[in-house]
Length: 320
Image 1: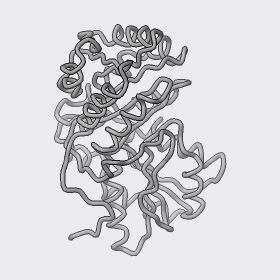
Image 2 (image 1 turned 60 degrees about the horizontal axis):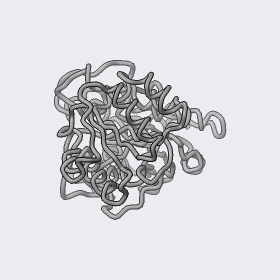
Image 3 (image 1 turned 90 degrees about the vertical axis):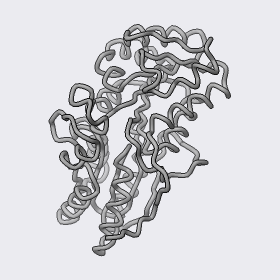
């Protein structure tokens, strides 16, 4: 079946490349931008910055805790450190250092985390961090951003370079549709309503924004009008956009490549229960670890795709 998609794409590219290209441009714009990496320069796409600005790049080796400490120190000297490694190591391995040396004292450190979620694929459960958004959003002072494609990741990288304060920026490895504008303005903390609807709201983040776009077209085929909102900033959460949409549609779905516990859905639920109680269905990983497989296989097995967003939307509507 050919779907009438409101957004389309002609190219796929990994979101980590959006970070790498944004990081290089941020370095060209501001001489205070510096880079650090824990022995994963190629995987983080930080090589072009290193070549162009070798005196502003620090290879810390497989010593992530030390990398965060150095980043905190550099920020005291007026630098804007971008510390890059896999999301699993950027959070689970160095949570104490982030909490004590970065978040507590509100340091201007950018924690840049690649290979997040199930779409890391064949590397398996030990590397597929599914708890990172929850861990980072609980830290006072921390801004948490999870863009959806190459263009949005590049725009987000440029935006955080100009933002004062600690940031966790999450992105991934697989080639993914590029469906947002190349010239977009990224506003931290401001949700993007991509598609208008009246029957149900789909709040999606990261790779699942594309799946939400596909789900909207599938629902429209059945006469269901879905609103799609891209929640690229998990914290600070755009509560105004959430409440405005759900007040209109009366129910919602959250979709994320993360544990249901502690993720975007939890934040949306807290917002709704305080201000406008409404049915909410979750599309996310349900209290389990991942496993090895291709990104597509894993998204299907764990129910993180358009088909499951459609099912969740119908379930939410039935509860109104």
